[in-house]
View 1 (cartoon, rainbow, N blue to C red):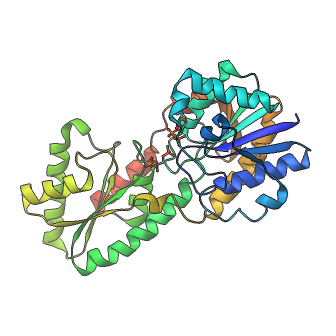
View 2: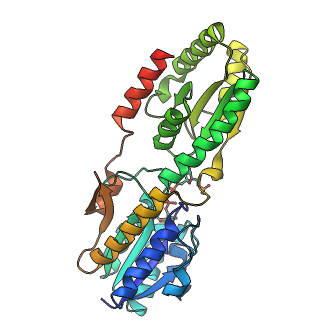
View 3: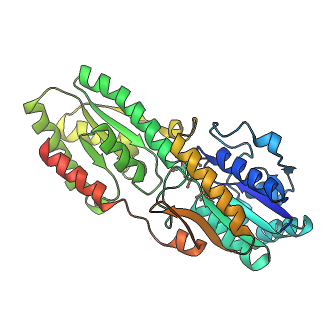
Length: 329
Ligand SMILES: Nc1ncnc2c1ncn2[C@@H]1O[C@H](COP(=O)(O)OP(=O)(O)O)[C@@H](O)[C@H]1O
Ligand SMILES: O=P(O)(O)OC[C@H]1O[C@](O)(COP(=O)(O)O)[C@@H](O)[C@@H]1O
């Protein structure tokens, strides 16, 4: 194997730079040239790249975002776009493409498979943690930590003003961030896809109102609701209006948004990214169509189809812990 191409794609995640660094260092050690293409699949489409050297990546492990930039690329949904990417890879005599990204980016790899003979390797990186075949994706631990610290601060105002707060967290359609952050901050309520029937939100709302009213009778602290994005019609403001209109409950809304995606990666993400980067280069020699992950503390290499198609539910133990805590408080 002489030449590897590398992209970061989809939502940026803290730890992507650590993965880039590790891949480049592993390539250097094995005399493999590493070309970094910019802006996800767009860079492969438009031949926008730079050779990645040890000097270039040496100081980046601690930084969020990605030095290769990231993007979403509409053209990849059409055969002509995929063919263009394949032709760039062929023109540069690339032996393997490593994609650092989420499930969408891996679907891009699957689309590329029929058009390109080189080896395709995925490294899971998304704050949402919604990829199977790995306990955690790169960026998730940092996002949980960032959101936890943010809600700790919100909690001070919630308590001081005895106010209900609705805090929206990211996760697209999965509740990994919501549940982990909700438990870590001692949120009074977690509203996410896994514990709310989206077809019966009226019941969810009625239960929530009961919970708020009964807490009000017993103590005078704040009430923090962690709400998963895309769950409630009209988002957190929709829920805020519903609480006001049905039960005269006033609340404050805080959307954590992109704060969760940025910032320096925590040690766990740096270490995970470093390990997966090294393993990805090793796998690139003789495997293709696989994602390198970590399951129960061990490196695990699985087919990208399985990683993207299989669902990864929020840990049952977390949900049980939340239910138990709710009963005790
Ligand atoms: N079904 C698909 N076929 C081809 N390419 C895809 C597909 N889904 C996603 N991609 C490519 O991967 C990019 C990133 O996917 P996206 O879902 O936005 O982020 P993530 O990889 O973080 O899940 C998309 O912009 C697109 O270029
Ligand atoms: O950057 P955009 O296009 O606003 O996308 C927002 C989405 O990206 C994320 O931050 C990360 O998702 P992906 O890693 O799957 O791209 C989601 O939590 C959120 O729903």
